[in-house]
Image (cartoon, rainbow, N blue to C red):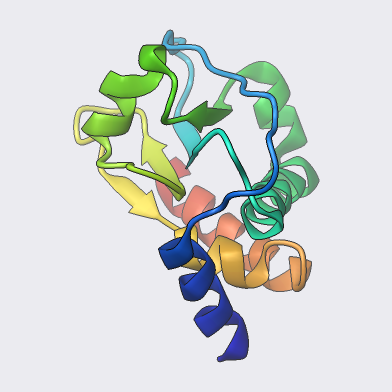
Length: 140
């Protein structure tokens, strides 16, 4: 419960202390089945960075082959950069947001922001469980 409260407090107050390189690309390969977007601002706090690291660690631990062959695509998106404005608006991401999107006609996103902040680095086993359940459901 403390982790969830901490995660919400961090998201509400914003992340203001660290910067991190952005990896963005607007093209999506036809073979990509799942898009994973971690939206963030230019200045990032430890919680934001750890939420992203926890997500990347879980994806690499569970789906390395799918990341390598493009079935799953992860992108870190800086919402403050002009080239990312349309994508951020599409998913209503004004600041930190982690979403998994099935690359089909529905394009329905699954948001895992709070869980990434709560479990990302501090509880990798739980983060792995959440990522696995989400991805496996989308791959059905």
